[in-house]
Image (cartoon, rainbow over all chains, first blue to last red):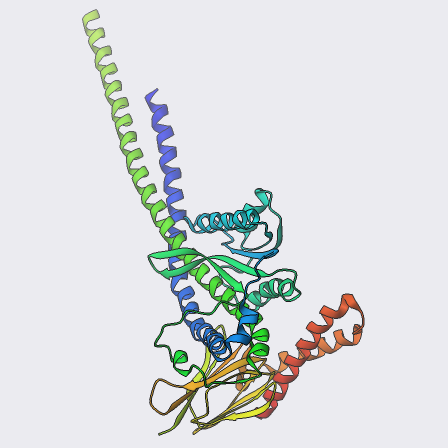
Length: 297
Length: 145
């Protein structure tokens, strides 16, 4: 009987070890992707900041004109919600945290009597919401690991059209923001109407309050700028989402590798004991048999 | 001393940054030139060639619509001009062959569809935009030679 147990254990150890190889490889791949995705965030920063500065500048330059475009109507009949997750799982809390926040937001909006039109980026988001019986209007997949600006323009055009046609009054986005290597947090952000960006007080744009010239005038400028600002914010969210995904996956896979190591060690010990037991039993049997033969003479 | 720092940035990367003597571009209200000490301005840029005059000569970029902001820079007397472009490329980096192919494809599509048709209108607009981009690229590349 003991030999059978030993064989079972040996097989489990082998399986744990091969799982460990996979998780280790995934950890290394994710780790290699992190610096690349961070570099993309940094490369995007001047553009995003420039866009925010222009919006801030415009709202300071002509508050009345800007208010018309920035004000949220008292009753939002229809809101567009964009949820950004990954295409793949095995990434720790990354997908689930975002999806839970997204679902909470949708439920909250619906309770307030707002009709929600759902847009998803990443396979996981569309699958999650469809499984829960929510209608996903449009789902974009295949580029979240490495978003390009052209992908973003496609997503943004689907969101901007209903907004500009007046079918929806608000666009919200749920995504994971990359705060630092150790901290990523889910954020719900209003994309349109534009939100006055919060920039550091010592930023140069706050110095010029009042005497900036606009061509064309603020209202027209902001109207045409809105879709561009939408693209810029979605792009930045996608880049930070990708970085968060890789960071989260690396951490999850490192933990899985450690667990596989622990499990392998425990199983090896159990197996060794089982082998020892079976050897001991065998010796006892031989000795017992020999003893019986001798006394039988 | 009055100086002008120009930055050309796209969402994917900062294309160019450096000191310049002038920035020449076209907004929806007409052509304009930004010189050092220009008054703070915010405006748009229509699909056109944006030129930057530097001490080493002129650098040109094909900008497919964007925005610009002029304001005081971090140093005293420095004027900072930032050009934000969704799609932009330096004229020296334009793939002429690709632009030519794109232009022909867009023209073929435009010839095949009519403007009045509702179903075709989006396709028509996309093709028109593609044609405009391709033509600008070719024009910008021609400027280089």
